[in-house]
Length: 276
Image (tube, rainbow, N blue to C red; front, side, top):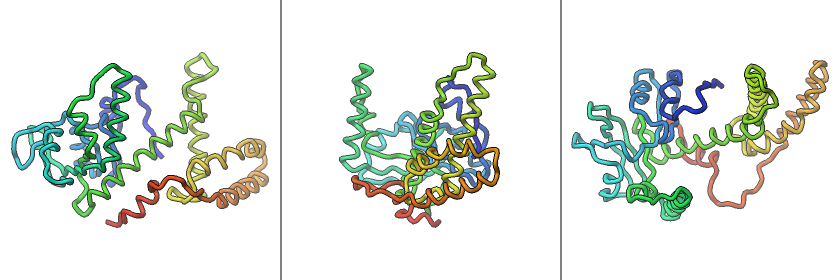
C-alpha cells in the first residue's frame, strides 16, 4: 500500500493534481469531486485505467456536435442506457461514457438524501440535480469488453476504500493528540498509521480481500489480540505462538447471515464475472 500526504485544507481538485501518477496498469476510481480532464489525459499517457463519475457541469459533445450539459443529454435519452464515445473538452479529448438509469427506489433514496442536505443548508434542489439522481454516469478508458454493469460494480469498490479510511480515522483517533509540539504530533500520527497498516496486513494475509467474513469482524478479532501481542514483542518464540493462534482465530471467523437482501461488494464482484 502506498499513501500520499497532502494539505488537509486543500480542495479535492488540487489534491488530484498534486498526487503522484499511478503505476502503469493501475485502475483509478474517482468521485465527481476529483474529476479532471487533465488527470484523465495523464492516465492515458501513463497507461493507467480509470472509472470516474462525471459531474453535471461538464459539457458533453456527442458525435462531434456542440457541447451540451449532461442533465440535458440525459433528459433527452430515449433508452435506459447510454454507452458511447463522447468529447469532454472543446479541444477534442474524448473517452467512453456509460450512463445507466437507476431503478425507481434507488432514484428516490438519492433524491431524499439530496433534499435533506438542501433543507439543512437552506437551499433548493435544481432540475439538473433531480435528473442526476435518476442516473449513474461514469467515464472510462476501459475497453468495450467491460460491460456497463461491470463498470458500475468496479466503481462501487471505491466505497470500500472510503470505509477503510473511515475506520482508520475512528480507531486511530487521527483528529486528537495529547502533544503540543508539531514534531511529536507527527510522530504520533505515523505510529498510529503504522499500527493500522499492520492491522490491515494481518487481516489480508489471513483470509484475503474477498473473504466471506466481513473486514470489520476480522479487524475486531485482531484488535482483541493487540494487548497480548504487545506483551510478547520481546520474545520471538512466544510471539510466533500468539500469531499462529491469531491466524487460527481469524480462520474461524465466519460470515453472518445478513438480513438485507441487497448483495454486498464481494457478491457483486463475483456476480459480474470480471474476467476480461
